[in-house]
Length: 280
Ligand SMILES: [Zn+2]
Ligand SMILES: [Zn+2]
Image (tube, rainbow, N blue to C red; front, side):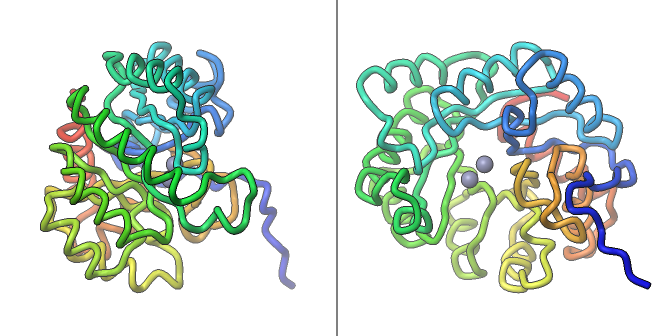
């Protein structure tokens, strides 16, 4: 007799894996919009070894949430930018506000910014590729001005994105969040010194190409993230994701790369702290 699993039920806690940092999550979208709800999400994460998180903004409202969360809880840091889908919101006023936010001491990256070629033809609310490219260039320059890492969102835009980065000149630290390219793109990013962050998508059954890419990233250039509430790792794909689910993906990377779970966690956590300039 088979019983369908309830997709609304949150994934169970993974076995504890200390030392991890969730390199990219969205706390407000996970329900963290007060000091209490943020603390509850981070307590849950800490209980399984996810000691710190970087919460990432999609738009101006979200950017204010992200900074508030980072001020409420010292396990949380923020990244601010306009997501490529919202690139049309970039005006003189939002530029000024984002620049001020990016200089905030709890903000550790400019992001997520980049290119999304998937949504423009599917959603009338999504900025056009041209508008996205202009906003992307502005964010690249912002990251350089404030001296913080640039956190990249890329969906189906590998070539255009790498070309813009090359033309503008990359900031010192570039993080490819939710890396989704193949081995050739991964190799190019690695050669440029970029950091590749892997989400639950690398654990999916059909992710062989992505797994090949994850195998060739040197130890010093790899991160792990949840991108919660989306992209819940296998075998809980489709359910609600949160930072406490990060050990599933970290363990998958350990097995893929043939190292122990503890070693992998030390590499991933150490890289996140170095790249974002945060202490444990
Ligand atoms: Zn993204
Ligand atoms: Zn995201």
